Length: 316
Ligand SMILES: NC(=O)C1=CN([C@@H]2O[C@H](COP(=O)(O)OP(=O)(O)OC[C@H]3O[C@@H](n4cnc5c(N)ncnc54)[C@H](O)[C@@H]3O)[C@@H](O)[C@H]2O)C=CC1
Ligand SMILES: CC(=O)C(=O)O
Image (cartoon, rainbow, N blue to C red; front, side, top):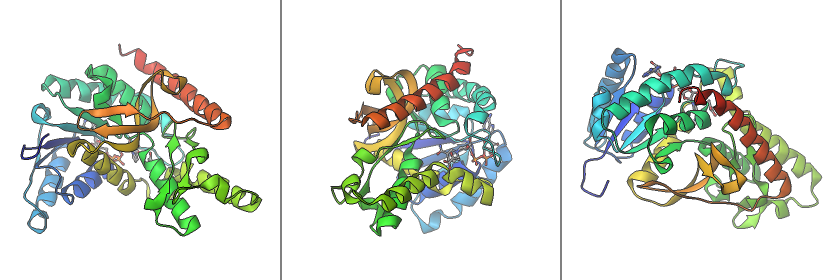
């Protein structure tokens, strides 16, 4: 993926999330080739034609509806295929049907000779990233889940609104499951280098309001799904951000889902943590010194995911 080389992304799943990602990606002028793959070939073809018609307003790029053989030359395969949540469903409720879909998809990608980096967005994303790692046999560094990238963005956005500060100047992370047990890391959240906990010290009203703010982060997907049926723009931009960190070898710190092997006291689960991302995938996990309450909540989230990943063992 060095400069001047053709870069190819293969996108599997051209639904709401996949096509929002494709649209956002082509507007970044980041890759030369984008291949769209979906069980519904006609949909992929329609999407490819529609996206191509925007190219005269952007930069040259090759976009087509393809097949798994096209993954052989891909630098990155992004998987957004599978079922999404119906109103009232949790992400973990999707595990059985989406694991079965992933077994077929990942096997087909690997049969092509693919030797790049997987990005997984389909829910439950931590468990399906783990499944992708297992099914692919690739090193853990090259199987990345979107993890809590979106939750962290929601957290920063809402804090920016609360304090009336540009969300890009709000620094903080959501760790753990991309789902109901995720954990806000208040002890490491800062605005303009000032720790948020010191900003709200002795202000019990603000503390209560920030607790409510986190609930809105955690439950954001439910609120949106109840209103419009699905969420896609936020995650699409997060996936493009991750793609950019890989293609441009940025060494960016993003909260993604990766396999922990001792970090945060956890072993053999995929879970959302901050990590440095470059063109080899995950360079390293950033291990934060969590306070005891955060540690306990992270452990609970990890236990929830460990249980969720158990059914994936039956595929081995
Ligand atoms: N990680 C995150 O932060 C987020 C994850 N998601 C997840 O992304 C996934 C996709 O959501 P949407 O795009 O809204 O769903 P969608 O239903 O609009 O699109 C799914 C696409 O997958 C395709 N598909 C299904 N089985 C396939 C197979 N075996 N091979 C190839 N393609 C197949 C379908 O034909 C469809 O085009 C869901 O699991 C959703 O929960 C959604 C938002 C945020
Ligand atoms: C659907 C989902 O995972 C989200 O919007 O967070």
